[in-house]
Image (cartoon, rainbow, N blue to C red; front, side, top):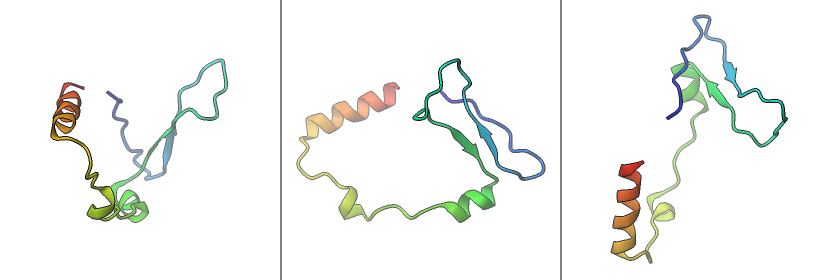
Length: 71
């Protein structure tokens, strides 16, 4: 579980990165935005037709959903 970082009172964006002795350019970073800025930068989701996967058996979906609830 990722830690929840407080939003800075001034409203500035705070970048949180993990510091290590080895530099990794592909390491994920977390950007904390005030709610108004997060909404401004949000993008719409793809259409339902684009997201639906038709050819997955029900048993596989059930296994997938169970794995998500155990995580």
